Length: 408
Ligand code: OVV
Image (cartoon, rainbow, N blue to C red; front, side, top):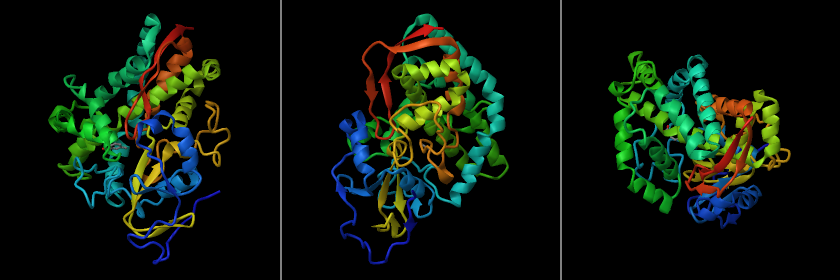
């Protein structure tokens, strides 16, 4: 099946007329939704809907979300990929030059970050990332009773990613705090967002300072971004803001992706057994965890003109909320979508988005090497205490996952 997007009749939906789609009384940014999103996501997939609580359209079927992601000029990012419309409200921070930009402006900044994070660069850092993953897992196997979030999902990326960027040691505690603000700020002006922004000043100050060329070690991703200002591909003013994108999007996403993967292995021992039997499944296990949990749950787009999705007219200047997590569990696209299966064909999942804005980093190296280390060294991962969820307007993940991890 496919979602069609066509130009709407000029008269279909003028400003202020009621939307021609079902209204749904669901708040996807409320704690009860975060606790148990599946029933509401099933309802959201029934139709393109209008969410009265926040005055936005919602799309949740795989084909529809995919279609929106692949039409970046009609469903634009430059008016913000959160609820706030940058044409109507001042952004809480200067807009990202890549995330919150449309082609053609986006094309140039995207090309720079693609080169900074190229397969050639990844090959250079791979051995170091692999050794650090093995060391982290070895240490946890000695301790046996650990918190898989703090001690692995956070500890591992924190042990490699800031070094790869070229950040100094001092102040790194701001990185996860800053990213949490960025991702909650995409949401509506609820308590989560307002509290996050209120406390953000010290984190913003830290990040702004670290993005300067003088504060980034030679050879790292940060210095590499700045080097593109020498070639003229980006200006001197743009370079620090592009480094900011790496700091905004590169760490917390990976933490929640890894957290999802470990949570899957702990809940589904049959999948852990399959992974142990064939450690080469590590990469697909990470992809399947990203599909299954969708660490980035939602993003918005803004319509630049009247448009139809599956025959539903949407006016210009409307916010459209894309449910990546719901699309990744759409039974129209996936067999047994609610089953975690690390041998499944995961290609086509949109946990990393799709189209021109699709995730440029993808955390795949970090995900793969940690899962490969677990596959080779651990016999089992068992939950041994209360699992606590972490609340964020965009990121889905855990605050705490107490486990016993046994040596193979
Ligand atoms: C994909 C993403 C998430 C958050 C922030 C950014 C990108 C950015 O470019 O700042």
